[in-house]
Length: 146
Image 1 (tube, rainbow, N blue to C red):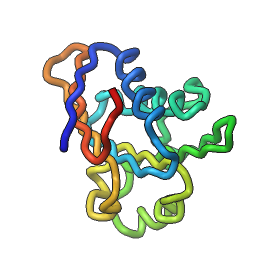
Image 2: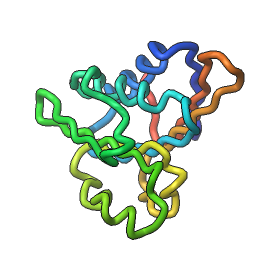
Image 3: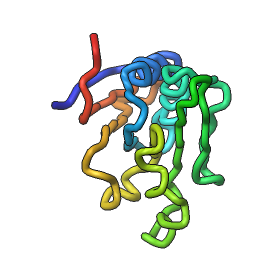
Image 4: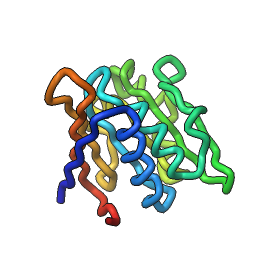
């Protein structure tokens, strides 16, 4: 089942992330798909807040590959950026597989590692139907509470 959501600002994108973060158990894998400027990092800021973390500590891990965030209750968020990952060797060097099941793992640029993603995951595809701040999110792999 795929759920669709539309946001019209970075704040609404963060609110959607917060809503999803509130619904997580704490060991999920979330694969984000979408090009440059789609709001992936804004979404992760909201996700972190929904997990009880400071959203102001979230930034794109483009050069670090992974940022680790710990919430007040010990909950972990592992935020990966797979933009520069081009091979299995690159992927293994990130430690990606060691993080799975240790907390919430969220990957930006998941299209670059699609063949390595676990079957059990939440996929979130983000598209921009026009040139303003509107984003369309297609979410599969989880049921969101109303």
